[in-house]
Length: 637
Image (cartoon, rainbow, N blue to C red; front, top):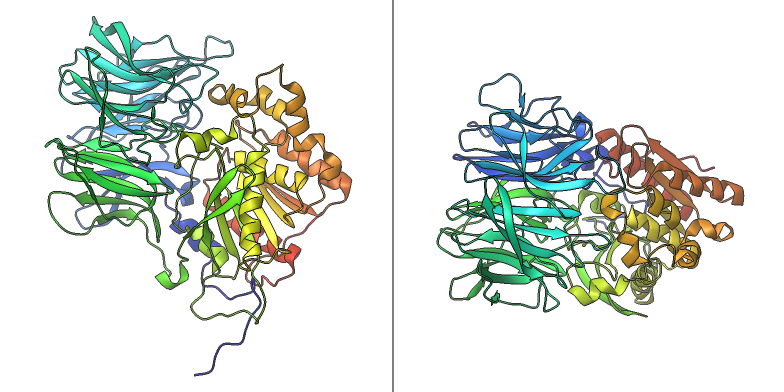
C-alpha cells in the first residue's frame, strides 16, 4: 500500500461538514426522572433553537413532551436556567420563552395553562418541585430603577399566581425546602459581588407562607452553593473557605459546619445558570459528586468519608441533573460530544446514554485532549491541546500546523478536556486548537480565578499569548499562523490580544466586548457591577476603562478579523461589534462582519451555526493561505 501524498495543513479533506457538526451539537437543558421515564430539555437547532422538553418513548425513539412552538427558556439573570420541571404523574411545569410566565401542561392536554398572570416584564426561573410545592426565582422589572426586584416564590399549582417566600437581596438562587416544610435554605448575594466572589447560605423559618426569621449559616467572605437538606434539621452545601469548593454539613441551629471528604479539587463552579448541581445525596446517605481539577471527574463519597471514582465518559461540563434511589442522571461532554447519561451506582455496568453524544464520524476523527501547562508572567497557565487529527492525511515534512486559540467566555468559566464537533471540524482539516483556561477560570481554585481581579484585558491576554507561544516554541505550532477566537468575554480577549500583542495573525470575535464604558452602561443587571472586580469601580477607575478598551486604540487594530454578532443580543449590544467593524474599515484592515437576525447572546439556530463554522474556516484559509474548497468563499472588506 502506498503512503498518501502529503497535503498542507489546513487543506486536508474531511468528512465533517458544518451541517453535521450543527446537528451533533446537542445542548442539554436539564433532565429529570418522571415516574419510570427520563425527561430532558434540549435546544433544537433545526427549530430555530427552540428549547424543547423530550422523553424516550417505549420504542426507543424520542418523543416531544413540549410541542412546538412552545419553548421552555428562562431569562432570569439573562442566562436563565431551571426553565422546567415535572411531577411523577407527567405534568410539565415550564417557563415560556416569549412571555416568561410559568405554564402547566398536563398529560393528554392539547395546550398548556398559565399559572402566573400577565404582568409586564416579570420573569421566572430555577423551577423546582419540592415536596409537592413548586418553587421559583422571580425577577420583576416592572417597578423601574436600576436593580430589578428578585425573590423566591411558591407558584400555586391551581393557577392563582405566585406568593413571595423571601426577598431583600439583589440576587437569590438554589431555594431548598426542608422535608417537613418548616424551613427554607437559599443562596443570596448583593451588588457589587458575583456569586463566586461572596455569597451567603441562609436558612429561615416559614410561617404563614413566608420566611419570617432567617440567619446566615455560611458565607460572607466565601461562595457557598447548592444547599440540600439531610433530614429536617441538617443542610449540606458546597463552599470554598479552603480555596477549593468542597462539601460541608451543618445543622439549622448553627453548629459549626463540618467538612465532608475535602479534596484539592472543586465541587462547585460559577453560578451563571440557575439550577446547576454539582452533587446529589442518595437515599442511603452516599453522595455522588463532581470534582474538577482541570478536567471533571465523578466520585462516590460513602457516609464514612471513603471516596471512590465512578468512571464515566464525560470529562467536561459535568452536571448532576437528578438522582432517585441509586440512579443518577448526568449531563456533560465526552469524546463524542455533549450528552445525557443514566448511571446506576447500585449495580455494575457502563452508564447508559440517553440523548446526544453521538455523531456520524468514527472515533478516529475526534482528537484526544492533551492537558498542557505553560509558564506565564502571572504564573502557570492551563490549557488543553487538540492537535491536527486525521486517520490518513499527512503534512509535508517540516511543515508545522496552523493553530486557533479558543478563549472561553465568562470570563469566570471553564473548559474541560473533551473535543467538540467544532474542534474536530478544524483538527480534521489539519488546524490545531488550543483551548485555554486563562487566569480567572474556574476549576483550579479561588486563587487562580482571582488572578484576574482588576486585571481583565491584561492577565487573560498574557496567559493566552504565553500558552500558544509555549506550543510554538516546542515546535508543535506554526508561529506565523496563529489565530485567536472567542465569544462575549472571550471576544474581549480576542480584541485585546490583537490590539496589544503581535502573537496572532488573525482573530475571530463573536459578540465581543470592545468598549468597557459602553458595556458598563448597556449591560444587564446581573453583570452590571461585574466590572467592579474585573477592572475597578466607576467613576474612580474610568481611566483604566478607557485605556484597556480596544476602541481606545483604533490605530492598533491591524489584524484581520472576522466579527460575528447576534442582532438581538442584550448582553453585548451590536453597537460594539459595529464600532470594531468601522475601525477596521477606516484602517484598511481586511475583515468581515456577519450579523444574524433572531440570535441573542450565544448562537442557537442551525443555519447560524452552519454559516459561522463555514465562514470561520474560509476566513482562516484566506488569511493563512491554505485551500478550503468544501466551504463557500468569504469576501473580506
